[in-house]
Every structure is written in structure tokens, then in C-alpha cells.
Length: 206
Image (cartoon, rainbow, N blue to C red):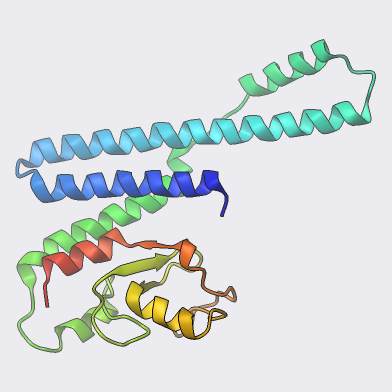
């Protein structure tokens, strides 16, 4: 994972954590929705700017390759082509994978918060939740998670302590979730705290 990608993931975590705190501490529904809208708009603006920077870098690399192949092109022509290409960049932040992921996570947070008032009383509740959108059972230890982390590669969630213990025994370990199609070995640096599952666990203490 590049440093830039890591910074973007950390920024996205901040957006989601802020949204989670707004949901938790803002009692006024109108104010809550207003603040959540501002957070989403800030993320959209960031997605748009990041996409433009990425596109600009790609254009720069293409022009550099062209200038190497055609040494007769002068700096003025290259600069003109670059400015023209930059002005024609079109991005749609509403289709950005970061925004789509954020919207899914917000839905998960809503589910986690709404379910707080519908806590089942029986002892099998945790096991039944494995079939819902929020899974709180660790696929490694088969018990309730306490510190959930999500694998950025395949999207599956594990308890951090169980994951660390498993990787200490064998660092060349693939995702243990039955049916997972990822062939990559689990990299702890690509497993980040899962805010949605953590919120659900906090709202439903064992």
C-alpha cells in the first residue's frame, strides 16, 4: 500500500468516525441530517479533487512518454497540450468507489444504531446475527468480536486479537472465511478498524 493510499484510507476513516459521532450525539434529527450532509459534501469534494489530481498525473506521464518519442516537440507545445488536456478532465465523484463505500458504511451505521432498541433477550442472539448485514462473530475464534478489523482486500471482518494470534503462528495465511475468493495472504497493515461493526458491538454489550 502506497503512502498516498494509506493517507486516503485514514482520511476516509475520519469522515466515517465523524459521521458516527454525529449519529450518536446529535439528538435533533434536523441538525443531525444537516451535519451528515456537510460531511458527505466534504467527502464528495475530496473525491473530485483526488480524481482530478490522479487524471492530471496520468496526462503528465503520457506527455512525458510522447516527448521522449518525439524529441522535436518543444516545451511550449507540450505545455499547451498539457493545459488543454487538464481543462478537459471530466470526473464524476458520485461514482467514486470511496463515496460508494462511505454510503454503504453509513447504511451499516444506521442499522447498528437503529437495532439498539431491538436487542434480543436469548443467548443465541449473537449466533443469529451472523446471517444479518452485521456479523459480530469472529470467523477465527467463533466467538463474539471485541476489536473488529476489516480486511481491505476481501472485505471480511475479524477480531484483531484472533487475527494477530493466527498470523503469529503462520504469516502466510489466507482469509479464513468460508467461500472467500481472495488468494492473497492476509496483511495486517491492510486490516483497518471496522467502525460499523464496532458501533454495533458498543450498542449491544455482551
